[in-house]
Amino acid sequence: MKDLLYKRLANLLTIKSLVTVILTAVFAAMTVRGTLDQSFMTIYTMIVSFYFGTQAAKESGT
Image: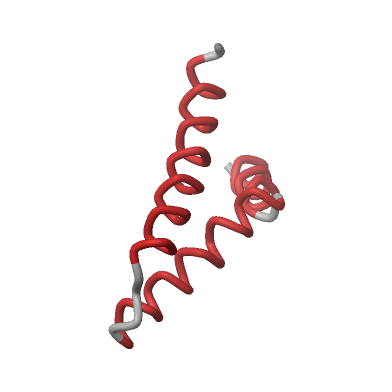
């Protein structure tokens, strides 16, 4: 159980994961401020889709 926790924490600290977490924080801040524009929304959607797409492919083994 402890090894699984350490493995998941290590995976969270990859560059891809850090970029996704930072972008999500910026997205939330821009939404709260009301300064969210369409270009950021497009970029954010593409990056998050890529992140979750690679995670799903990794889990399915393809």
